[in-house]
Length: 444
Image (cartoon, rainbow, N blue to C red; front, side):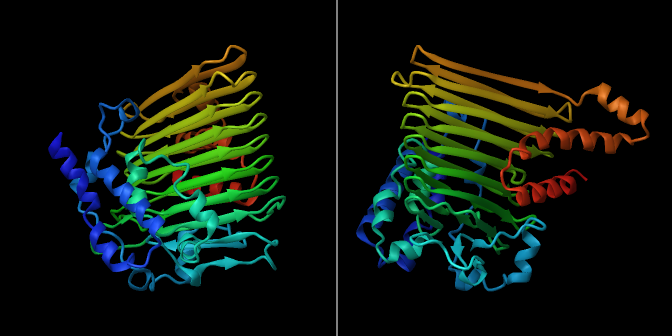
């Protein structure tokens, strides 16, 4: 155990050097957050498989690499221009509002603010700039929702809080253009670690759509550990998309923490395609009556990829609704995990919640661990959950082949149909088309 903890601490190896190089003028409150995160991670280390929440996912491979902290953008980001950027982005998808982060650091030259003028009071920019001008809302909300004492990777992210996206939508403003956040990891002489931190504040009656896209240079080894905190006030709405297309050698551990007020609405679309080891934690806390939460997910893995989806919908108030649908597609020797929990607290009477997980197995060697959970402590609720695992329907395959469609093409069409049951739920039509094009190429 001691040896494992010591290996885990190698992920903090660059902390003091970065602190001395770049954080000498940080505000005291941020320094305290970082130090608290560092101390917690030193105490906890990486999670072990004997812990129930990590039963199916072994992250010890992280300790067998020497991940370095990223250099400043001045050293790592000069190579990436607008033309290079297009090679990374999804085809035919270019929303007018875009922030780009290269190796964890904001790149203002690649940002795009294509709308004529943002509505009054809207703030879209990078977190480091908001911290440097001592923004009171950042100080009030940052590191309030994601729990470092419950999650070692959140503690590690806290220790390295430096940059990411800052979005604030003021009271009553409905932002109709989606905000596209692009995180690109470039090649490096040695493996890097990155800890993006995103903070989103949506005030009463406001509305926004946000796309987080994570992309890596092909074949590169690195560790990405993003944390996103979203505070949704009364009667506000957030539609959130996370599209993970990391390098096939990357480690991607992502955490999204959401707190919802009265009659608020949160919709999540979580897509995982890349990475050798991926873990995605999405937690939403329905703290006000009449709120709704929808979690949709799709993962497609092959080879020896491992993807772990953990979700929690915490009903803490009455008259709330939630629904969850996750689809997994697994080929070769890939392994998938779905662990979804719906928690209904005693005050949460009249809760209505459904959860479904379905997995399509394209190989006899692929493995899926599905663990839907209900914890109900209220007596007037309507809740259900279920999981299904199966192969491509042989009758459908036979029918298509009898019509002259090749085996490979028929298999591809049926697999796409299964995936599109998730993507058809997107409200953003251009993103739906771009992801569909990506899926066609990915399966090709």
